[in-house]
Length: 192
Image (cartoon, rainbow, N blue to C red):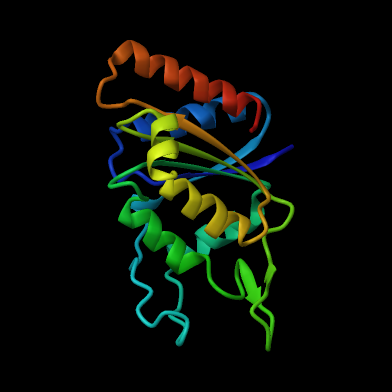
């Protein structure tokens, strides 16, 4: 049985992202996967990595549970909007506080290299946009996806990362949103 962790990075539980995360969860559970979900907005933590890596700040209990869930999972599903071309601040703060040296990667002494501690896991990024995904990639080089996929997940050892763009959200109606939600539920059923 595949162990899937869904990380919802939208602060509003009435958002399309919230519905997409729930749809993926429903599909995955219906296919027999074991599923856990984190709504970053519901966690009690400071998103500020106050001292960088110079001094360790103890993880709040919610972040300790989140890190244990990340370790537990075979597959991480990130659902978030693109705001100003990037990740929402709360998602960036979550990553800054949880994806720490010794937790998700380990620097190799006297080297610029690092050990990747999340090897063997896979991921799926589901991101909503107010522009077509192809345009976001072609014109802006998909900065939020590059940051999360390449600079975070692959940096920590997650090699296989699928990306699904959902948009154009601002021009969508209920019928289009229902199609997107059904598409993500099917993706959950396939556990990808």
